[in-house]
Image 1 (spheres, rainbow, N blue to C red):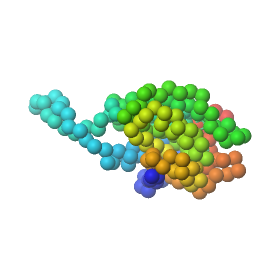
Image 2 (cartoon, rainbow, N blue to C red):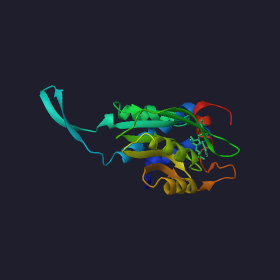
Image 3 (cartoon, rainbow, N blue to C red):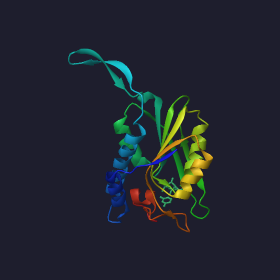
Image 4 (cartoon, rainbow, N blue to C red):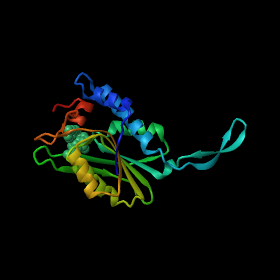
Amino acid sequence: MVTELTNPLVKNLINRLRSSHTDALRFRHIIGELSKLLAYEAFRESMLIEATVPTWNGNRSYGFIREEELVFVPILRAGLPMLESIMALLPEAMSGFLAMKRDESTHQSVLYYDRLPDCTGKTVVLLDPMVATGGSLCDALQVVKSKNPARIVSLNVIGSPEGLEVVKQKHPDITLYIAQIDKELDANKYILPGLGDAGDRAYNTPE
Ligand code: PRP
Ligand code: URA
């Protein structure tokens, strides 16, 4: 299931990202803000479990999300600014890391770092701003599935229709929230109009 966010607040932030006047610091900040808005949608139906906490007028029972059942997994590099922001919302959750680099001639993703915890019975939330061909996300999903999670949610900022279709076909069992579905891919498999290379823009590396 793919859900695209429609709130104008989201579109306003997406379009600020598109501007090449947006420098790396602001780029990472906006990616972080969009991540919180994506999480707001993704956790809309989450169950609240009662727990007793000490308060100023004695022990009281209130509803909380089971943060210890969540594992946030950014796909480095571009997914990194999403992690800090989401962890500020749900600080008791665990994190795992995957690093992938798309080969710019074959457009295939290459996994170069895998530091995932055991995810048995957990909800894994994958974080990557870009879904272009969908190759990186599909490969990440395969790695995550080998860790036995109960459920997988993907939070993404911009995607192409063709990349999202590939993800839907290969992984129909996941839930994906995205801030913007753009028009298409160009000949080099970059999203149009897109943002350019999100990792390079976030970390000031040459394109
Ligand atoms: C970007 C992006 C995705 C991938 C999307 O990462 O963050 O992981 O490309 O492309 P795809 O859907 O065609 O696989 P990139 O490989 O540029 O690495 P980076 O984050 O280190 O810049
Ligand atoms: N990776 C990016 O960062 N941007 C694209 O448009 C495609 C892949």
